[in-house]
Length: 336
Image (tube, rainbow, N blue to C red):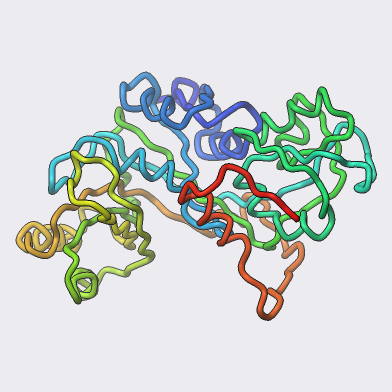
């Protein structure tokens, strides 16, 4: 299939970091965007689009639950090796956040900061240090934040290089305002039309549900260890779909392992999971793909911008706000 024939949908509008990820993952493709993650998933699920681009994790703020849930909540059998919509590619994209405006406005004259929540959380220390009294207005995307500036000469937004040089033609009032020098977002490309796992795939992501008994997680991890497969990461997300599991307050354990899906050791591991039904209540394989974290160097991830060590005794505000918002405790953050 020619690159020009591939249809890719990303979380828009244009010039967002998801747009940048789409350009890197599928150069020369046909690009479309949707403003809703669910609409992206539906267009991929129906086969209308070849691939969808989803951000799933950030190195500063952690997992992005709303996107993982789209993969986890889809219909599947209790022990599923092949979900309909699955991860096909992975990209580690370096994220550069800049303070943008329509003119070279002094910091002290900026009255409102328009921003998506994720960029805000990745720059919260810089904002509190440099714009302590600023009014924060959250938007659905970085591009939507930039659009707000058309009616606000005293406003600024947070965005990346693609947004700065996009249609809005914004000025970088301050560059690299993210709190952590190595700020990277992990993206998945998902598909239902394309099922073939790349021969060079070296990473697989799956999710399991285990009983609430002492030692069950250890036992499950021991299966992985005894198979000789390198465990890369373990994350948790609540099981929220009744068709998946009806018991209250159960969690998915999302596991990344360094192996191809068709590797003999991994297939043996899945057999063990199916045999140990008292330990593994359910599992689903979310995808097997090629992973190259060093790709960030090729994408221009330069030297550390600035490294700000945490102040002793100071709470980790980024994790605090992330957890608070993810739990649904509030839709706004107020500084006093």
